[in-house]
Length: 374
Image (tube, rainbow, N blue to C red):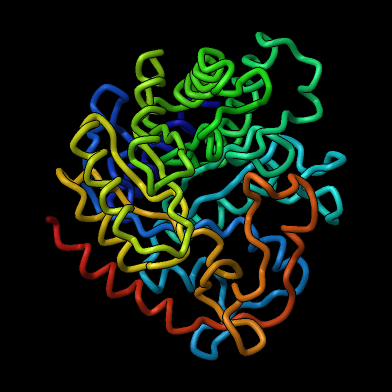
């Protein structure tokens, strides 16, 4: 890339860090990134399904006015977007194997990143190192990586991560944060990186992805994602294992998806902030108890709670939109869990009109309340 292009991207990034909810300025180096909140609180949303839904006829409305989903979220206080990316979602058995396009591949993710950045929103890229959903019960190798030995897997993780982030950087949408693996509670790329059998190899795979991200841009903040936001003891054991093996990262992301009382989430964020002051904390996924969960993150000791990302709020869990007169999340299938199959129509597209409901009105108030530096 020419020097003048690099300079232009740096100027744009420096400007963006003043107006989006990045937790630190993009110009920070890996050695100076603070682990506490230094900028606006992140109110983020994972809307990776939106592109596919729109391609199949979904429209979005806010108070009766048709609008762009990014603009609607921005107008209600959202300032960050999380996007998932698969290795080859169009492969047989992949996430988009039955779709008309390979949604959530590198090209589609780049297109969504442009839309987010056009609204002045920050970006978190969530790498599923698989052709389909990766979660605590499923960490299936991409088909193209099946026959690789362990060193080959490490190189594949590095090269895939580097390629995606380089493409984003080239178009001026370098993400502020990158998630190296999705809900890697039990490791990744099984069986080679299954934590219970090969924790050392799991750590090495993480290091490969982290190295690639930092080669593309040292300012990118690295997120490691654990699925059990309620069980701080389990998370602590996991973190200790990674730290002991020299895995260097910036942020601990927790899934907080279930409908139970939010008290345990508060305990998790409070204790992790005290026990691991070198890291920032985010709710990487949630759907319920919206105000209570965000209060728990925001009030974590030492400003270590950086923000949150509601998961697929246009059509899942307790959604922020209504569809055909009822909450768009009602009756949708849950994301895969330990007993769910790893393939199937969980991502099948929605059609029709989606209107914002009263739940989205929680967010402008949260944005105002959290704007007061505490």
